[in-house]
Length: 239
Image 1: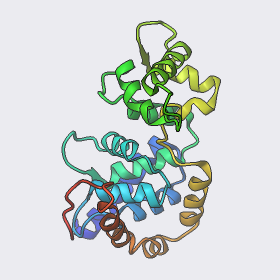
Image 2: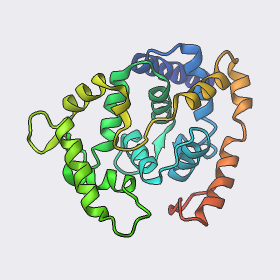
Image 3: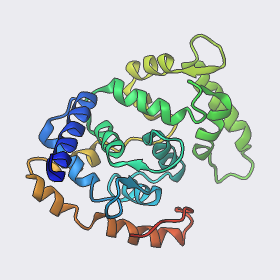
C-alpha cells in the first residue's frame, strides 16, 4: 500500500470514529480535521498546550486560563504529553454536537479536577473562587464562597454524600440547561460555535486547508504576546 493511500485510509478511519462519537456530518468532520491538522508542528500529530490555549482564546472566545488548562487535560488521553489531532477534533465535535449528554459528560470531566468520579467541596472551592469578588472591603469573600458552595451542594447533592456525581449533575442540567456551565465556562457561546461552523461548513477539503493555513503561525504570535502577560507559562517547542 502506498504511503498516500495509507494516510488517506487513516484519515477516513479517524473521520468515521469522530462521526460515531458526535453524530456530525462527515463532510463537516473532514473540515474540522483539516483545521486541526494546521495546528501541530510540521510532521507532527501533537498540539502544544500554548497553541491550544491560543485557539481556545482567539477562535472560541474562552478566557479563563484555569478552565482552558482543564479542558486541555481532559482533551488529551495520555496523562503526559500533548493532545493529538484526533483528540482535538473530538473536542471541537463536543463544541458542535447537538448531544446534550455528550456535553454534560465533557463538562463534568472538566469540573472533576482530580478525576475521581465526583466533584467534592474542595474542588468547588477551586472552581468557584474566581466567581466571588466584591469592591466592598467589608465583604468576607471566604464566607461568601462558603455560602455559594452550600447553595450549590443543596441544589445538586441529592444523595447527600458530600460530592456531586455525574448522574446528579446530569439531572440538574436536564432540569435547567443554564446549569450546564454553572461552575465555570468550558464550552464556547453558541454564537461563537455558529460562527465557526459557518466558517468551515460547505467547503471543499482544499478550501478548508487554505482557510486555516496560517493558524499555527497566528497562534505562535498570540503565545508570544500572552506569555508576557503570564497566560502561557509553558515552554513551547517551536517549528
